[in-house]
Length: 132
Image 1 (cartoon, rainbow, N blue to C red):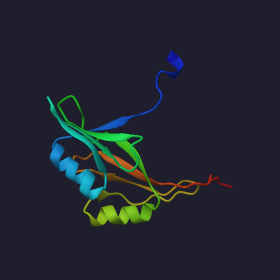
Image 2 (tube, rainbow, N blue to C red):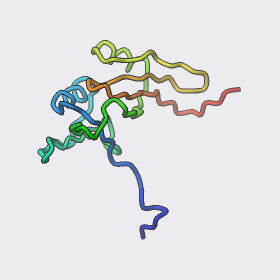
Image 3 (cartoon, rainbow, N blue to C red):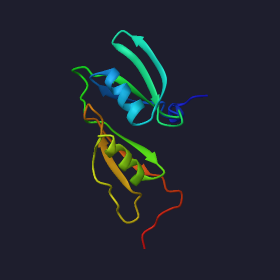
Image 4 (cartoon, helix red, strand yellow):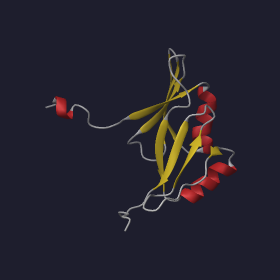
């Protein structure tokens, strides 16, 4: 039985507003290595679902309209090696910031897609980190 307390059970997708769905698709697939799960026509363009690894949460590339602001999104992706991911994206010409290395916090960095949407990549650390 669904009640108000448990009506939401997870996140299926995060939408990213883009001006050119084809250009964005190439960036997310060719540069970031995402997998296309769905790509079909809808009245406003295409319904595109992508997954960065597992498909527990997917990214949709929504055609940006005047009502949607590009550049304000912040999704945090994970990686096993932030330095390697940073090198790969930087060498591919992606607009990246420096890697942040703070005590007690996993290494992370921000980057932007061709539409200026901001994302970050955080290194996955399995053990708990505590500062003493």
